Image 1 (cartoon, rainbow, N blue to C red):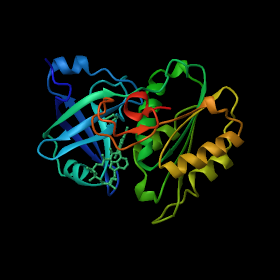
Image 2: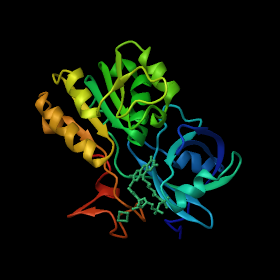
Image 3: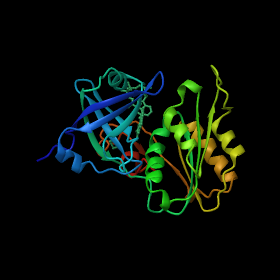
Length: 263
Ligand SMILES: Cc1cc2nc3c(=O)[nH]c(=O)nc-3n(C[C@H](O)[C@H](O)[C@H](O)COP(=O)(O)OP(=O)(O)OC[C@H]3O[C@@H](n4cnc5c(N)ncnc54)[C@H](O)[C@@H]3O)c2cc1C
Ligand code: FES
């Protein structure tokens, strides 16, 4: 019988340093059979293991429309994430998944999409954004409001520039506190969202970031006319199994790992 906790082996193809504490890992599953089995959708997550250290949960920041590599962006937080940051290109790690539900890519067809992200919370949004760009004819205009604490904390800087040059894609980047030669916007994400005021008609908003940001973003979105049904968020709870077995991630009767993380 297969053990549900056995990870697939994956080789680190490339490591991109995003900020002082975030690195993006491009991974390739070693076994061709596991490549076939690892079918994921934007919004899903995986358990990433460093052998001899432990496992941690990360969303899949890549899009299934670009199947060459799987990507996870990892912020250094504690034991496992520090060990992940010590890894080198060519090292082998374990991956279990994909787990959880996903963004409703079919229901979003024909809609204008408003993405609101904070810090590393851009990672799951990036998966959906690139999915939408790879299926451009199926979706309406895109608006992104993204912020980080300082300019140095912004992730995917090169991609942000590329998105900014993409037709029908409005990007609004902001930082809480200016530093260095930053000439861009300064202000909290919910405030900038209110200033940008994307139209709510035929639009769906998708948000991910720190809980306090999500709280004020949802408030701002409802003031802009977005109904609760048109606001999607992805939640992060401390997880262990990722499979609805250990009871670590529940909010009332809901298991974030199984019923979410997309709500
Ligand atoms: C569905 C989901 C998707 C996630 N996606 C990403 C991602 O794409 N990139 C990323 O960098 N992180 C992501 N996280 C958070 C990541 O799982 C934790 O930061 C990581 O597990 C910490 O492990 P550690 O052993 O390094 O930290 P620990 O040594 O276990 O803890 C260090 C600190 O981090 C806190 N912490 C641990 N786990 C979590 C958690 N799940 N959420 C919030 N705080 C936590 C602890 O309370 C403690 O304060 C995600 C979490 C979930 C549940
Ligand atoms: S992480 Fe074990 S039940 Fe959700």
